[in-house]
Length: 373
Ligand SMILES: *Cc1c(COP(=O)(O)O)cnc(C)c1O
Image 1: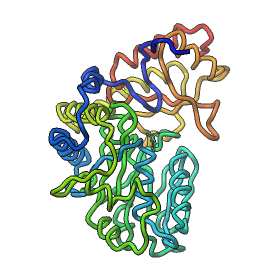
Image 2: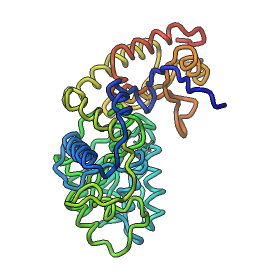
Image 3: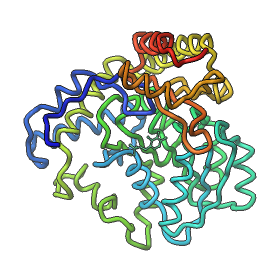
Image 4: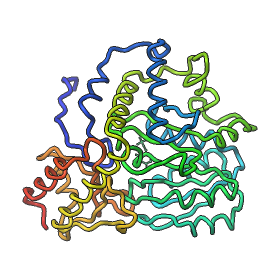
């Protein structure tokens, strides 16, 4: 029971975590320092600046929540919402549904825009929702729905939301550092992401950014934020300001890892990284289709980095997936919700987005006796 950990080197091609670069793993073994050590404050400043660069934003209130992507989601909602606020939340998969749950716990009145899983929300859908709820405090969307593999266009919805006087909130957990994402250009007011998808860092941290418009909403709150840990009026004194004050003990080693992964992203260049995800996706797509797989999402709205595909007929998906993991050390994801037992979710994110990964997966499939194509 208390044996030495003996984890085999998996090839991570599911919905996250993705493979970490050896430089990131090495950074995690850097000696610990105190979370208020001037050296650590310098590291935080560097991380903040790199998060601004990768979000393509100048937002002052840009920081990292010491918890995974779901806590970034919760940070945005608990800070912006007060009891009785009306909001519009778009649902086309698991994560929109999770936003609704959090918003309702904040006491908000939620108007849902629901479309079929695997499709995206259109500007028309938003306009229709605004007919019923003309002045919502915010409209929330998931940019890359990891449960279905759908890519939600954001820019074309942004103006509609702002013309209604609302804030635009976006989940960028799976798109960040893998697909085109421009926070300032698209006028996003509240955005959160995670570290373990296209950034290829270990899970457990959530970069977040608020526009000045969102900061004003924060400053005008009438009630206290429901969560102590996620209350930005307290957290922001730890991430900025002339005098850093203790709020909580930051996960120092994870911050080292995040810093290194951001350095790697900036060395590659955001645009080149977006292009790599598209190019490797094209190769994977061609090979999967040759084996008889079919995509769930329409080509126009398909995520390149999260391929949700139906297996060729006559396959026991759980059996083949378990063979991949146990005999070939390759992890792919199963389906969620209505797609459980029906689709696979094949991730090519960050360090897992290489031709080598594609070839390993395809040749393993060709090798598995139980796989029928
Ligand atoms: C993974 C994911 C999350 C949640 O992130 P965790 O780090 O698992 O908490 C939220 N939204 C989307 C779109 C995701 O893919």
